[in-house]
Length: 135
Image (tube, rainbow, N blue to C red; front, side):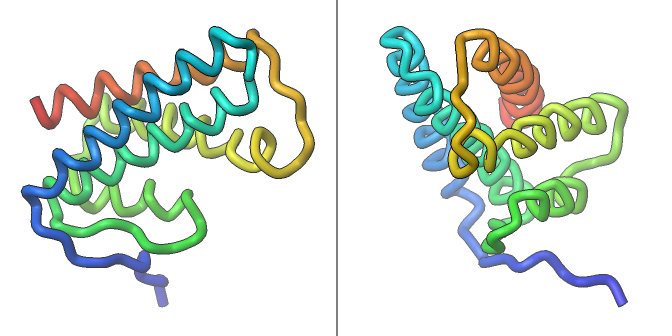
């Protein structure tokens, strides 16, 4: 039996709130990186991507993942939008961001500018996909 992704219903119009949150986190990440607070920047980049993912699932499925496992958001994204080559690429970028979540937040890894450059590459590509869907 396949486990269903834990979710909560949302009014689809609320997706724009999550876009604003994502933008707020992204701008704060830029400021943190400017002052060489690279771990803070990394956390903010990842949380911005999660808010972008939530905006997509809310907009297209009226649900948001409520589980602790952020990889479950990928499954919910797959359920929410049409399968395509661009979707697959975007989800790979999102997964690479989630791969960093524990390291940047909880494992004592010290991030440097080069690490943020990598995160931003994946973030911008995921963000571009989200904006192409939402407009």
